[in-house]
Length: 123
Image 1 (cartoon, rainbow, N blue to C red):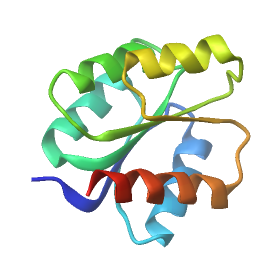
Image 2 (cartoon, rainbow, N blue to C red):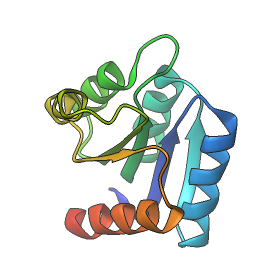
Image 3 (cartoon, one colour):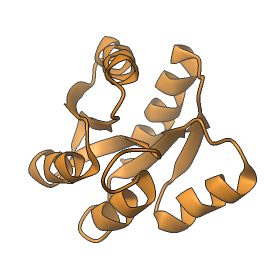
Image 4 (cartoon, rainbow, N blue to C red):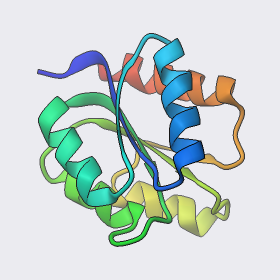
């Protein structure tokens, strides 16, 4: 069963991963973080988060493939967080299974609001 306050953060950049984790923890979420898509998939499988934030550009498998693999077994809400701001990338994110798409740089308040909205929509 999905815990309404559990999230997974999948981000290869340590600074951004730390920022996203801190923002979500301050909002009352339990955060599990991974630096690769494969590790993130395992965390989603293990913790069944209500929301997963997912970077697009990562070494190994990218965010699009990570999202597709997560969608194969999980209903977690996926928020893609990427420096890629063009519409084609956003469309590709949605086609891969993302529920929302946030471009970097982002305001912590906006990140928190988007995650809160996704979590509310899941319940």
